[in-house]
Image 1 (tube, rainbow, N blue to C red):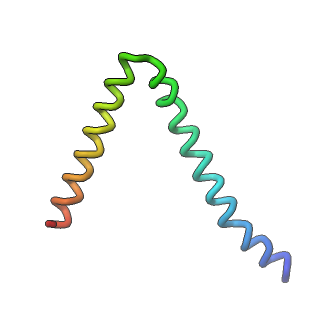
Image 2 (cartoon, helix red, strand yellow):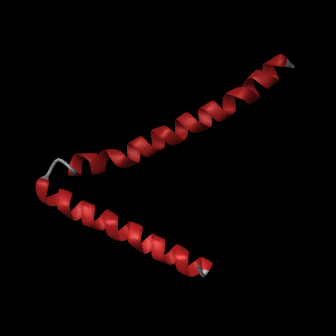
Length: 64
């Protein structure tokens, strides 16, 4: 029975490490694109527009 509880306790750690690994794998190509000056400006503008768009969508959906 203790083996069962040890496995249950390890699942959150596994979940967090899996999510962190997934985020790192997804963000690695963007990190490489930031090394090029022309693309750096385009990426900053793109990310800024995405954040502003998401903010506006959430505000309009919640009617704040």
